Length: 448
Image 1 (spheres, rainbow, N blue to C red):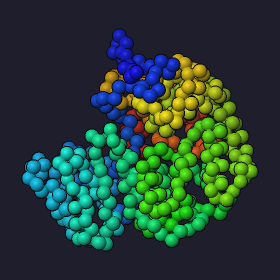
Image 2 (tube, rainbow, N blue to C red; image 1 turned 30 degrees about the vertical axis):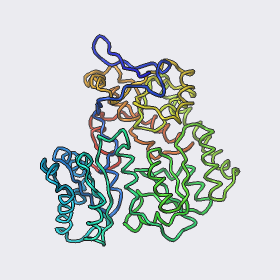
Image 3 (tube, helix red, strand yellow; image 1 turned 120 degrees about the horizontal axis):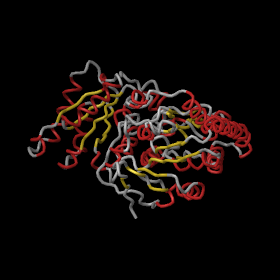
Image 4 (spheres, rainbow, N blue to C red; image 1 turned 90 degrees about the horizontal axis):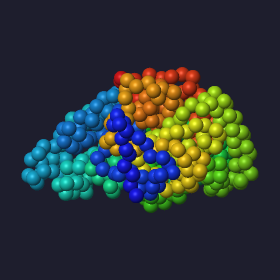
């Protein structure tokens, strides 16, 4: 059954013990609260990954404020335009023409046409029943030299597809099937560069393969070269919908190599990759024997330094918060809090193990409205917490934190070792909490 977090006598939210929570339906999903930890990427940040592309947002002025400020903070206003919708556009029958003529006016004012334009429609278009196919066809006819991409800023539709999931599909929409390069692998779904020290890169290098990552694309032609890949891989779950679309359109096989902190799952994923690129399990063992030892030493070093200090983890830092918590608990760390609103089915085994390892771990939702009261910015009582993720950092009001989102580009045993280094750094070098987590879009340029 759904759990509602309780409030103590000071009206501060209290977490639910992990042993008492319903894995399938942990918390009531209603009105959402968004804590002021701004490092998580939104659709503006993701769209900016396409080099030489331009974004046009067509929505109400209140919504425009947020996306425009995002582009401004990134120092990328030259890649952003907008068309403001009016109330009368909802009933005068001109919604489609408003989008077409607005986008055309923007393009006609440009000195040079961009190679790709991402057009973002909003909730208003869905409510009104706008025909995006008509819009797209007309814009393509008017400007055949531009690749037009349909995108959606529709947070009200979270019950179907979340904006981030839809954006990942749109991110690769312009890519077309090209001449196959048998030695090119495309890594999809990551907003930030993957550590080249990880086992994925080591295996590909051993087999003579190159890896395509969107974060390394300098030109639009570099970006389109994904269509030449012979294999697609991913390790973040948010890319599932996009991967299905790409494999169907480009006829390229896709291997999901889920980010994990479990030794067997990591090894199985690497063996799967090795088999696909002509390597053997012995090749995997040769590489992982070294990285496993590095991870064990790093965990031991971090534990000796951190000792029994409480650790909090949130789901923005990694798609596997329970798996990470299990790894840390098995190595003697004192994990006491996990902030997560919903649980992935792939985390069930780790969840069950955690219940045995430490049944008193507290689970907090991060978006429940009562969490507005969870953090007293003048309260230093939780200052000893070492946090992994910005939301845990905010709620615990700790200056000792690992500042990552979506795995931080770390993978495999090498990733575990690198995460331990960040834990050590978090303990030794406290950060300015407010300044750090106020920067919108972690790893993006910021004007702040």
